[in-house]
Amino acid sequence: MTPPPPLGRSRHKDGPTFDPALDDTRLAAVRDDLARGRWDATRKLLACTGEDWDRRGHRLVVLAEAATSAAWARDWQLAEPDSPDAAALLACAAVFRAVRGQEGPDEARALCLAAARMAPRDPTPWLCLLILARRTGTDDERVRAFDQVRARHRDHHHAHHLMAACLAEHQQGDRDDPLHEVYDFASWAAEQAPADSPLAVLPVVAHAERFRVLARAGVEPADPARSGHWTTRRARQVMKAAFDWWLEWDVDEDAADAAPAVTHPRRKVDLNYLAHAKLHEGRPAEAAALLTRIGPHATRAPWSYPDRDPAQAFQAARRAVLGAA
Image (cartoon, rainbow, N blue to C red):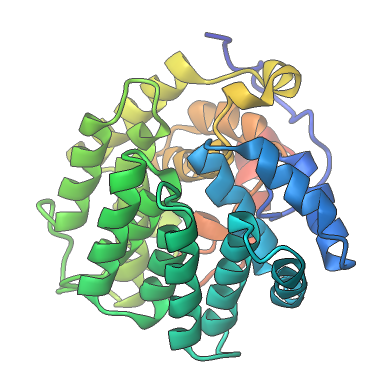
């Protein structure tokens, strides 16, 4: 294990980017090409991604979120109607159009099912259905989509995050229940995953998602700094286990640059959740080490929870523990 960099001023002087591509520079470049209507680079990127399902899902979701992706994906599919990659991109882009209210969910759902038939082993069309069900579906639809993802890739990172967000919204009540189903789900998933899986951080994600729900309901203070949500005995145990996992399994960024395939494509998502938790647990040294590793790759969740400006919250965190914005 490579130890965290020395605490102190971050080596990244730029502000947070909030780019969903995170540190996948090739993905960001291909996304720019796709926005200009050049889908050949997208075809090559997805072909080389192969059956690295977490990376494939991450890349397809990021590519599909762009406003023009559906049109270019349709052009690609017309040119290559037998391409499962073109079908998956079109399905995912249609899902985001449906989530934004630009088209009905039925068409997006049909495209996802068509993409799933073209590539039966690929969990990504089912991930897209889970994204759609997260916003427009029922609990049963979410569970069915999640089960289909997990049947194809048991430790799918994005799908587990989505389910944690969904489950956290059940039974809002007037207090936090330490036996709430989202905590059980996250603990179960972490225990089932391999030792090096980033799902070890899922209990921290569940804790943040539950805070989002409770704060919006007025059960917790809207300012996480005033909340005791991260200082209970159970919360501290969860945060310690996740931080210990990071110390053991973190990959140095220099090594990641040399061999990106050894790193998880969404590892920066987990580091943001863990840094946010450590900050509000009152562990500034640990938060500093994590924020240094994050660099400019901030994610809107959980810094925006419950209804905050994520850039202001992230920069305030960096000033508090690193002395840098």
